[in-house]
Length: 251
Image (cartoon, rainbow, N blue to C red):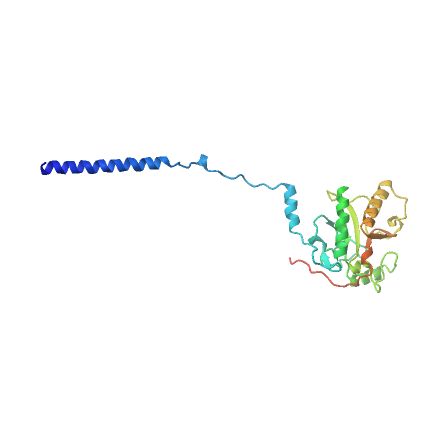
């Protein structure tokens, strides 16, 4: 074989080898599946229904675990099922003056526990507890006594009110839309129409007062004759009078 023929044969052999390698590589590439948009699994968007949202909200609430029953706590930190109209943080009260720097409801732990249980029962009936007043500093009690020095309506600040001990609350009931149920008078009405034994009232009012009274008493509270809104925790009567003021959130 002369040099020219040998050279051409060598080139042909190289080209054939290259072609075979290319075909083999192409076959391997073709054997691998190619991903397209249709084969990529996209998880559906996560949606949280209202009931789950309520569960998540409640997980942010604090627990009473390892807290003494006599400790003062902010009620809203332990339940978000209450409604508030803290009158002494406004001028809409019999003092005609704002005596709380900001609207907060503090009670002893044992009072808070009883209130939460009572409210759960009210909610089964379509109601919620609405607060007008909770713990009250003893210094505010003195201001009230100056205006109404009548133990039928205002406790003598020298002995102290159960409000001052974190064991009393002034409340009413509202429906789930926040509408107050009829109770015959406004909060802090100093007159016979606010008395539990005053029965010359519409049947609906007497029924509403009876519901409030029966459930609160069931959960350890007792009422006073002259104020349909006032309830004392029986277990809170012997606690110490307090005069601390709560911190207000910064603007």
